[in-house]
Image 1: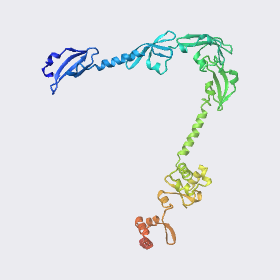
Image 2 (image 1 turned 60 degrees about the vertical axis):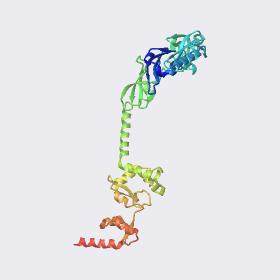
Image 3 (image 1 turned 135 degrees about the vertical axis):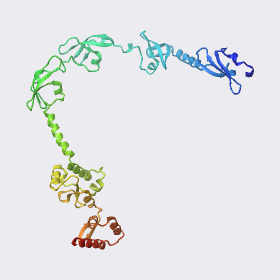
Image 4 (image 1 turned 180 degrees about the horizontal axis):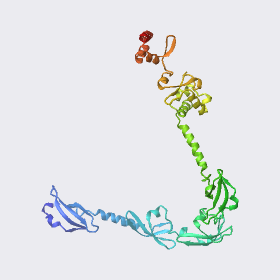
Length: 396
């Protein structure tokens, strides 16, 4: 049937609620139409055979929205009853009437989640009920509204009349008096001492603050705001800060000293079980003598008296004993590596010597000598032969 229809004659014709904009045949010779809804203007493509059956999806969505908005009318949320509703973007805005007669617009979700329950009349305070109520030293004598703010006038126990204050400030406890509660008697603070400062004179310049003239223990006289002294912000004329900075500088120098770091590392190896080296020292029973353990300066004195130089490390002469003046010395890393618990010792010329040291002195390859020793070979003839050779050379 599609083959006998003139597609050019279909343009700008109306079928149900659709206007045909354009038409063409696909590769199967079926007629395809570009159509537009005359109600909402929505455009789409459709086959000629299904044109009379299809409905506009945009119109269906609009109908659903309209049905939903109509279903909201008459619903009640606390004090509010919905009169009308409409969409504003993705939000639903409703016009609702309060029980007090006031009509306002609200967002629907604020009604549903209970955030809005009335036009505001529910929270309105009867002004007459406030008269005579006491908050701290204040008794309310008058209440009024000013720019949506509830304000009251109150009499204070100190004699102040008609003190004007926000009711919210009274209710939350931020205001308890006309200011007399915190007002200071100037005569009472003269002679008081705060830190290094002694108050000589107190006065009010007229800006509501209390000023004091003080004398520091160093002799300086200076004026301050009394509040700074009362809260502990100011404790001296500045001489205390200079003194503390001097002490901190000395302490910093001590802690940055290379000897102190060696003393600290020595302490951690022996007594801090979280230190990676603890298992080789503290766990083995290696300790620090009482003279050094609690007194860094004793260790520092010993260090300088025994030839300490930067780059040297503290070395225990006997690896099975702890850190003490009679068992410690300053050694290079090379010397310290030859004085470990796994160091190889041999007896040569009736003396106990470190294998690495004798190999270095005789000019022998340490790895080769250790390999022979591990294979149960006798290395003494090699050492003796090399010793005699060097001895002959020295006599030439």
